[in-house]
Image (cartoon, rainbow, N blue to C red):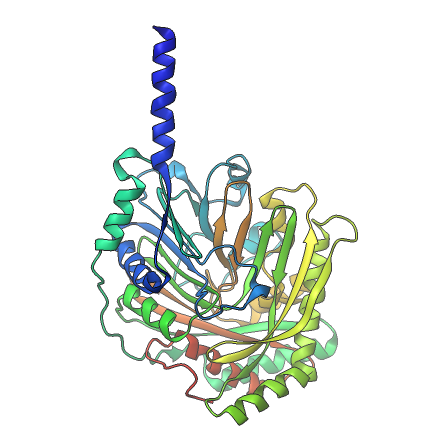
Length: 452
């Protein structure tokens, strides 16, 4: 009798785990329809994250090391124990190697890792950190879709059926005309002071950001769909946490871990695109040869090398590519790739050594963050933080939250932030223009490459 019961238990467990994860094939031509359904599907949940590499737009980007075309996770906040909301709770991730986690880190997490503070107004009030175990997880790569579910009532096949039957609920979106938090004159005054710090040797480089905002109601789902269509990016993300939304068209990777290998790909150096091929080629060549733009990237590459050396095996930190030029719908960017072999370290130790990312702070990093707090006028929130996933076995991939809209539906408060790096060679007027250029990526009514 005991043996029969044990066999029955084993059969039930086998069935249970089989239905929890299934892999289905699909025609690649239907990928865009699936993505539309996924965005609509998030309306049902309190907490959802879609990470889209837009692989159809970047088919040859081997430098991106992307393992998935898309990852989407969904859950409701009915079980708070499934959420990680504090830096001191990150050890739970290391203890759960058989689970997926999706989530984010805000810029203000810096205050828990260094003797820093944030006293500027916070108009979005994101929790500083959040990771969740998705009750439904969808992973797309090549022409397969993996569906994971944590209960028998929501079997993978039924999830897929519901997804395919979901009717798209998108509305027309209009151009945003968000207003600057500070005037251009104030921007130039503040950045002149930053340049004085650089000349005195307080810092070598600093990323200064400004905010554009309004109190306006939007449909975040339709807006994200429009942004992702007009400005596809390799680290695009749609995050929903209650009434908080992030709509991101990020081109930048913060950190990726693949077994013992860790990779960072900072972006520093920007030039506009043009629909005129001759002008477009000139913009690209100018970026490639610009001493100022290359200096920005090289300084941050050196900072990232230093950060990774704290958690890397001896002599394993290498620069695979220095100052590569890559094209995106609105801009050209300079990207460097730094790789290292990890020592036996925890996820929290990796984040403590590397966050916030150098491309959004400056060098030296701590002094740069002190001056950012002094000269910026609001808290960044999730902007210049990171959004991503941790897979079973502790591999992970996180973006840098730039080219993004933050939306608080309760208030309702909508904003985007844009910044640029200041070095000794910077022209404050041109840095201001660069902020405006970057804003096109999160303009939902903007057609790609029509403004330079």
